[in-house]
Amino acid sequence: MSEVATEKISLQEIYDLAFDVFSKYGCNQDNATALSRIVHNAERDGSLSHGLFRVPGYVASLKSGKVKGEAEPNVKQNLPTIISVDGDYGFAPYALEVGLPVLAKAAEDSGIAILKISNSFHFAALWPETEFLAEKGLIGIACTAAKPMVAPAGAKKAFFGTNPLSFAWPRKESTPIVFDMATSTLAMGDVQIAARDGHAVPPGTGLGPDGNPSDDPQEIIKGVLLPFGGYKGSAISLMVELLSAGLTGDNFSYEAGTTDNNDGGPPKGGELIIAISPALVAGNEWSTHSEMFLKKLKNMEGVRIPGERRHKNRLDQGPRFINKAMLDKVKKLLE
Image 1 (tube, rainbow, N blue to C red):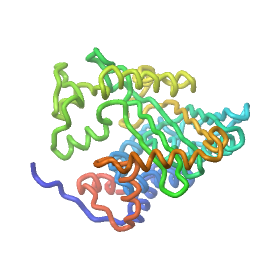
Image 2: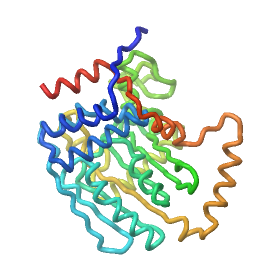
Image 3: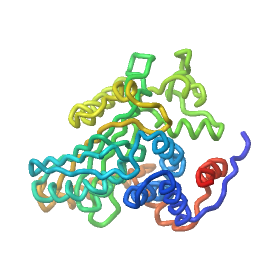
């Protein structure tokens, strides 16, 4: 396998490039800022499949008219612990910036609160929203569905989305525990990057178009992804469908698959976010008790706490080395 060419670029240049592209293709300042912050933070933290890699997909949906670049999300709080955000057919980052502070306040007041987002297009990682809550001393849980890409356990045809699930736990003296995982063995973005860079993926990632297992990402892209852990991952993916579509009233994956215009960007869908105050639910000793558990876990040889690597990457404010072909593709959007 030949070495992949990269280009050095500063974090500020990453943000500016994304902002200029989004502005050119119809985003107002609020939406362009929210999107560019998400792209910047993904590259900063090493979440490469959700950084600049996603920009062409965002642009495709702006160009097709499917997504509104000047969307104005609308927040409603009809009950003290249930907040609804209508995304006004815009991308999710701005809807989240509008809705998450309201969710956090509701959880701080009542112990637990739910935010449901509808009429939005989610194309980013899920950890930014749960980490936002954890940094405010709250537990965060988030999930969303997508278009069919994953075969349920026992099947060979796609029905579920990659259906990611994120969880964050606050820590008073340390960075929060945060995980963000697809319920497929690999997220589609990671499979696409493996195909781009010319390397195989782990066994169990997916099936080729012939229905047989494959470690070739090119074949899996033409075929179907598999849930992690067989029927266990399949059950969690089903749960995500019901929470993010059944509770929000927005599209299940199969509905998104039949209504999306396939422009290369994300489908319209819902997202469900739950915020919990550990202080109100568990009492003042919640942190001391959980830290004893985490200390014992961390002391086990070979264990890495979820989110540690991303937070370590974040400490490096230096330039990043970006896939040159992909970077050139993004820059070309400004021509």
